Amino acid sequence: MVKLVILFKHPEDEDTFERHYARNLVLLEKMPGIVRRQANMVLGGPAGKSPYYRILEFYFEDFDALDAALTSKVGDAAGKQLMRTVGSLVELVFVDVFEDNTPVSPET
Image (cartoon, rainbow, N blue to C red; front, side, top):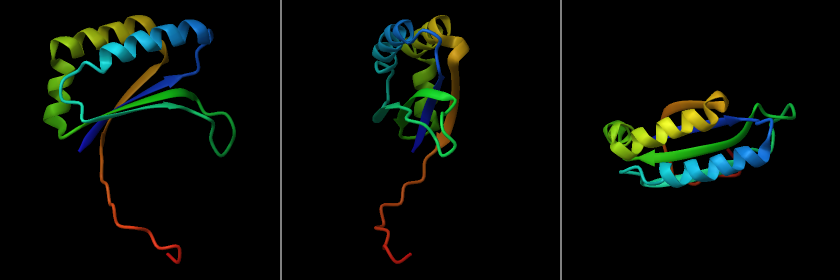
């Protein structure tokens, strides 16, 4: 499994950002091949304020599915809209996901 992670830095105008964010999310969710998504509001970090305000994560079966989503008609439109509306606040990364569902013992 792989995921597209979209990291949003703190905006100067949260109300305007949230309007753009909502519109962008609607379009991003239409990309083909998404198996799961997470929309996160960052609370902070160990040292206090995080450089990130929101984080979106879109999961795909494999990198080919992620690539197909990004290069699809809707993926292209979503990317262009994202860059046009909040591009200066955005970082995108591709992540290879390893999930281990083995219960973790409190003793370890």
